[in-house]
Image 1 (cartoon, rainbow over the protein chains, first blue to last red):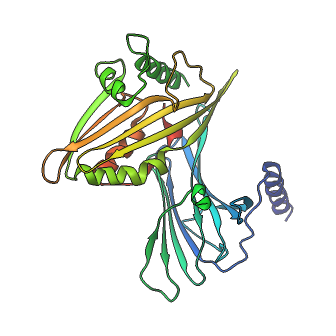
Image 2 (tube, each protein chain N blue to C red):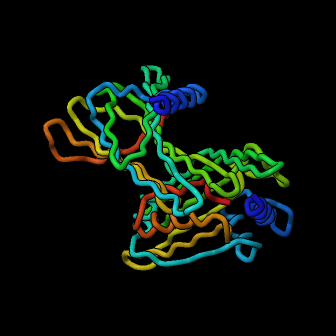
Length: 155
Length: 171
């Protein structure tokens, strides 16, 4: 119990120090994110994280938190009908040489009420990809969603 | 770290060329690159038209390559931060496709020569017709340190993949 409390405290402190908060994720789980990461080396690792931002009418972002994509499939609820900005970050670190870096892929997404979204997040052999497929309400034919940067919000 | 500095030095040497001048256009890069130190010119054929390749470049290059990267490295007694901006330009027509990749160091590297506004030319890729549904692809770029970029561009050209290269892994 004490150990569990210490681990929890450490996690809270780490999150607080980093200024990052976990995404509350209280809504209906309309995104299923399937993640596959491999650094291709025993001496390095890659971690995938999703950052969620709300986007207002002026295209201003409000950070809502992060979701660790540390399992093969993670379900997330992104508010339907509202514009969100999703940042998929791949953070790599090398155990030897102390180098680290991160690269991200972002997209605007306004989930349709009742629709579900299959998101494929992959990092392999130093190549990464994020692909989103929407299944319409009622289970119609799925379609690929083009990723759109923040500049698309202002158009 | 040493390999990164070697590659940066090589890129600077390439960019400067013998005349001590950095290529200011893709065409100047094409002319100066062959035979230059640590520059590789690769050519191969793919069973896709130059138009299809151009469409893939147009779809993938801005999304994958127009990024700014921060890399940090540390070792006993040293800590270095390098900010680098990349800019991709795609010129795609019915019978030719071009992809240019420029690299601009914003922090952590001092330039020796005057470079173009969006940075020095790192890669220039040309796809030209080589048959009814085939194209010849030529990639001019650094001979080492940028393997992940070459792999991504080759996959876009031959249609085998659409992944983005992790630009934190280059150099």
